[in-house]
Length: 80
Image 1 (spheres, rainbow, N blue to C red):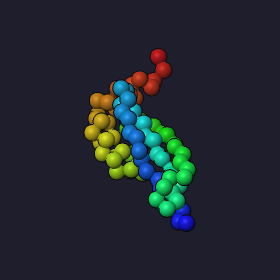
Image 2 (cartoon, one colour):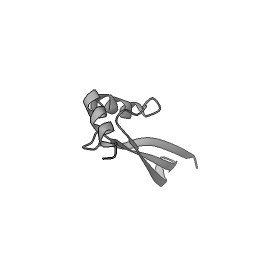
Image 3 (cartoon, rainbow, N blue to C red):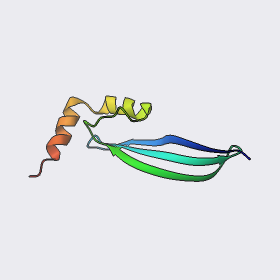
């Protein structure tokens, strides 16, 4: 019986305001079959440092987080 912990980014969503939602799956595998799994979610906001993110998340953020998207997001965060 060989147990293995597998962590992967299994869902990436882009929201209308430019935020990127990331779901990470942690699966415990026994002889190639999943016996347990959990999920963790986090959000990457426009303009955030993405250097620690998965390469797929970095690529999507590079495409989506344009200068205009970052400026619009930051402007929306200032209380009226």
